[in-house]
Length: 171
Image 1 (tube, rainbow, N blue to C red):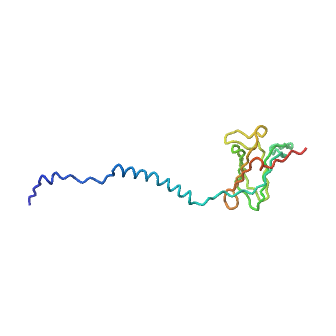
Image 2 (cartoon, one colour):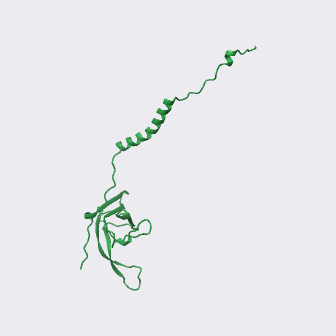
Image 3 (tube, rainbow, N blue to C red):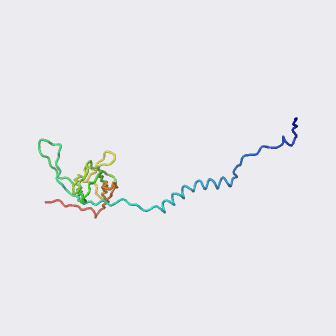
């Protein structure tokens, strides 16, 4: 069988793949851009508002006699301005962190037992660099306390100005 090709068979063009028009491409890109944004807004509106628990703590700011434990020969006690924290709960605290004015920080290395007391000299607070809190020249405006409670959650207590109990020096 001889097959003879005619001009009409040669002039047929191959089919082009489906392509998007300008309008379809524009609409597709807009949907692709807005879909994640719409999902975030949807999640924001439908998710329940969960706040960190409030830490139950007794705080006192004032002068305290601090013993210098590095001096072995003679007892060396100094009166320094300190923050005194007491754990009034029946559960221990782990990972206790304190922050003064959102700039100076202190991390307590040990677990605070129920009823336990932590005394921290204000001069022990430092920035993430090497600057220490100067209590003689800078005011303590805000104290933020973070601790891990027994449930494993992070509890927070923020104290500002009048909420801080300042102990007057005893003459």
